[in-house]
Image (cartoon, rainbow, N blue to C red; front, side):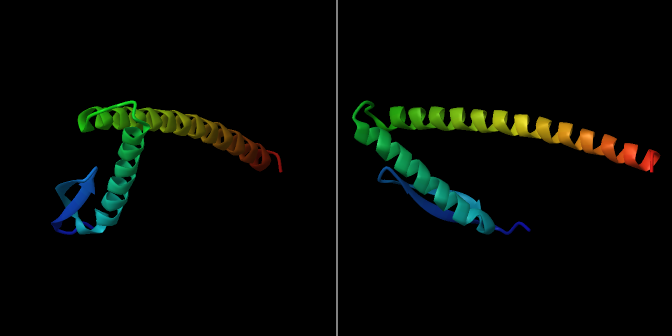
Length: 99
């Protein structure tokens, strides 16, 4: 059930952001912001990339790559599940036809 949006204050790389968010999604948003902050700080602390905008782009690319990999893995698992269910259905039909 959705509730009325509220404003949540997030701090990422020492900068505050106020985001409108449904009350029931605030915990997830805060967790995501903490993870983003940690990833951005890790890249910053590596010393290889300077500037918050460049760091944010690198984190975004890393997250996009992870998401793509997860979607591909999900697609493979979905296909395997479909194949398993098809075989199971065929087995059940054989059992019911030949008692």
